[in-house]
Image (cartoon, rainbow, N blue to C red; front, side):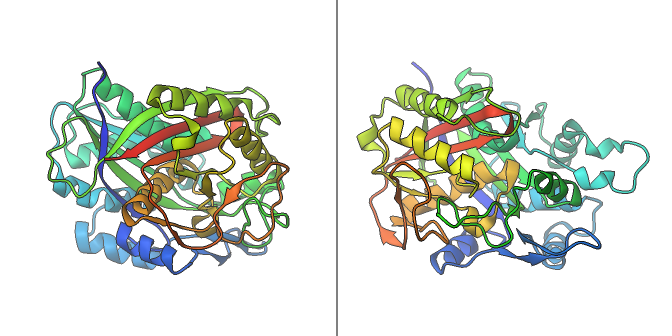
Length: 377
């Protein structure tokens, strides 16, 4: 019989706050981190969700002093701080980093490749500083990375090699990232509107998130959410475009629900990917309808945080758990009129709800799709 695996602690650092409580309170008030920012010299500003660097530096110095870390590394360490204080690191503690770009900003104005830009070196720098005894693992699979990192932790713990895991995720906004998405003509000229008829594209965001996962909860935790099932499927449709029939996402959800032994009618809430692009939103609507989940309350957090790439799945999982703990569904920001061909039960306002089973999904470039099922214990 497989070990049961639980999420029992977490934290996040975002433009809406440097801890979970600040983020949750901001979301209840409908606040968004998305605003106009000058990111690329001699170009018009972009709508994006960016952490205030001055505030980040101040918070980092207060907790870590004046140590030599990149901006992204400071985000990661701040997200990890309360978890490290609350939990012991042993020889059976895994450490998993989710990111798509890592320290990509180190490449600016460089003629040679800096060592810090390698994702393995980023992970090792964090673990060496914290005294982690095991070799860190990097999950970098486009925008499903954050969801997959939870699944990887679960499966590694169930092998018996590890008893617990710290899962961290972060990506930051850079000229490289903005230029890349802009070349696809995917960046919207206004705050994003997932699933809305008048959506015009994505907003890039940045965040760091950290989750503690264990097979041996003490019983004194403030929360316990069992990771019941997971799956990741690649539809191999296109380097950037999702399958028009939602095959990969449909298969991921089906597999995760099969492992969890949960039928569609028991899912209480869906935290969807919802990038506010035509093909992503439509693909998700098709996949959810194929799974007969069209009546389940659903939201996208992209209208609050933007698309935080490798951090989005982990951050949005944390907010989903907060929704269950507070018995409150957060609306999909900026949604007014349905812009997909299949029906969805998109949340329009704060509302009370009894949430036990959560479906979290993600999709990304290269045809990757992932899903996890979480149960409130």
